[in-house]
Amino acid sequence: MSIKNNLFFRVSTLLNYILDNPQIKLLLFSIITALIVIGCGLNTPKNITSNSVNVIPEMRVFKHALGETKIPLHPQRVVVLGGLDNVLALGVKPIAATTLGDYKFQAYLQDLTSEIEKIGTNGQPNLEKILYLKPDLILGFSWDAELYGQLSKIAPTVLVDQDSNWKDWLKQYAEALGETAKAEKLLQDYNQKIATLRQRMGDSLSTTKVSLVNFWANYTRLYMHRSFGGSIIKEIGLPRSQYENKDKNHENISLELVPRIGGDVIFLILGGHNESRLKQFINHPLWSQLQAVQQNRVYPVTGDVWIAAWGIIGANRVLDDLFKFLP
Image 1 (cartoon, rainbow, N blue to C red):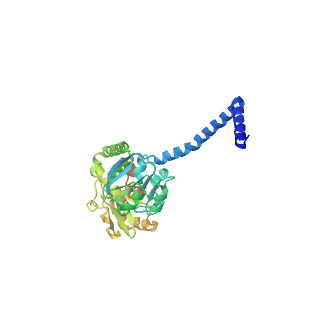
Image 2: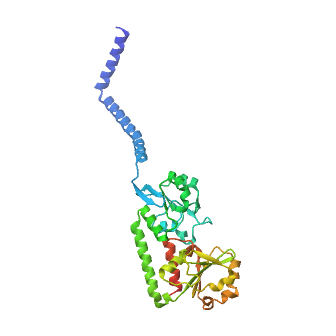
Image 3: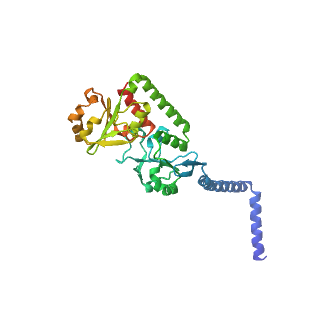
């Protein structure tokens, strides 16, 4: 018998033995089944990973101050470049936000800003940090228009008009975040709060002139209609003195012009000023001659709310102060 025929005979005999032995057939079947299961298990994660990577979020076109942008229907990783108050009021906690010039979030938002990463100051965001955070939506103001191209390469970017009012900012942010109903409810509650204040004040509403006073460097600063607190005072219908009844944010005056502060009520805006300047101001003879000072109608309020809030949470804090001191 040749070597080839001998090999064939041995293989054939072995196969016949295996096929005729039920225990060996069962063992082979188990091994093959296990290999198939293992093979499927190894392939499954690859398929899942591939599918998750290839999932395209639902998008929609959103119009804003710098044009149109395709944004996610349900953004999950939001970065805020100004207007943090309104975003938090809508129940959305961003992954990161810019701060005021002191690199801090406003104190009145302290309970809501834990775990929010700081990414520079308003008007000077840190683009490297934003890129690292991989946001799916960036919200901000038109003061960052020069950065719009770079921001848009990182994530869909919506910039609202910085010259519009804080209520419009709230509405536009809410639309971008899919929270328009919540914004409408917030504004309804705010308007009702104003109506209640007007009702409580009655006839004194039209006769109580209000002054908003702060300090800035070597000047006394009077805040007017376009300031945050001033805009709320105007909306309520509280009058201002002739000198302070101006369509501007503020005006600086020297100590010699303190008599121009003509409010029956003075809201003394504190925070961020030099303590020695404050003492110099309130101990000045001209300050002591003001009617509101003589009648003990000078009320301390915080600057991060009355000046820097520019959002619905801060607006309600201003109303809280007015309820506390005016009716």
